[in-house]
Image 1 (cartoon, rainbow, N blue to C red):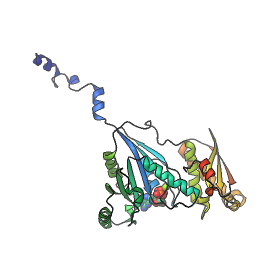
Image 2 (image 1 turned 180 degrees about the horizontal axis):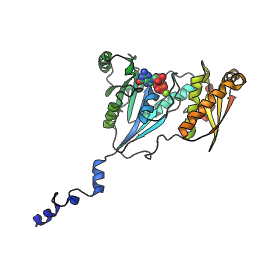
Image 3 (image 1 turned 120 degrees about the horizontal axis):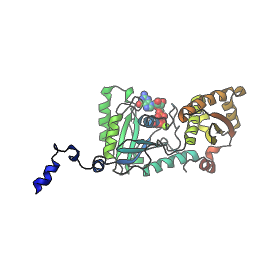
Image 4 (image 1 turned 135 degrees about the vertical axis):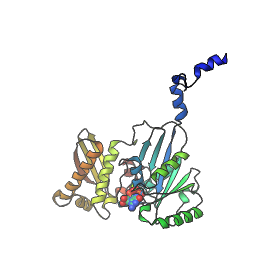
Length: 315
Ligand code: GDP
Ligand code: MG
């Protein structure tokens, strides 16, 4: 009797029956993984560069000046079998102004949400301030960035000395966020720690932040690139209106003298910066726009809690 039945199942006799139903197979093969990865580290170690490289898109802005990332930035990497949601954080530093405090609490929030934490240092860092992360029970990876700038020979001793001194790290991974070295290894290791579970966001999401946010970030990036001294740190950018082709942004500064510097003689300076911003925004949005730029003085805005809140920083 069984012989009769089994005959029908012989794999070579009837190929269409050698496997389970196609839907069952998908269930077996694709155990999905998804989770949150928070990236922390001092200003300028390369957090934004890493996010951008992993996501293949300019999600977080990158400039040579520290503390460009004020808010936590969400980037989402979705592949067939996994989804990693990256929380970027402002760099670790001692809070002074209200804006600083808001940034510090953004870091705490991101740490609380994490399934994995990347603690990023650059190749020069010999002492790690592990206070912030020591008490966490989330898997902690130490990423040593900018290895393209050191000799291969120096790398192993560095890893060894860090791993003996700091026991809180589950993994130590050398990378170059800029060149892409070690990123494959980083992703593979991340996946091995990522919890099983279905996706948090639709597959075509790159970020849960609205287009407006990135428009403001691009404008802010241009300000960081084109103005010196305290100007970048004293400005904020608000997107006041965004309708089809028309985008109006307001650059907020702390003092009248800063407004003059931003605008420049006969408006030449701001015109150049705005043109460059428009091009980058068009590239990001994939469409032509008209960019209207205004500059406004809001006295000491960085020290005013209500203003910081209104601007949407955590605090
Ligand atoms: P963040 O403040 O931690 O977000 O740092 P950024 O991502 O903005 O990077 C700060 C600076 O370091 C920028 O000038 C980057 O181009 C540079 N940088 C980042 N990663 C690397 C790297 O792997 N190698 C080198 N040589 N430079 C890097
Ligand atoms: Mg950054």
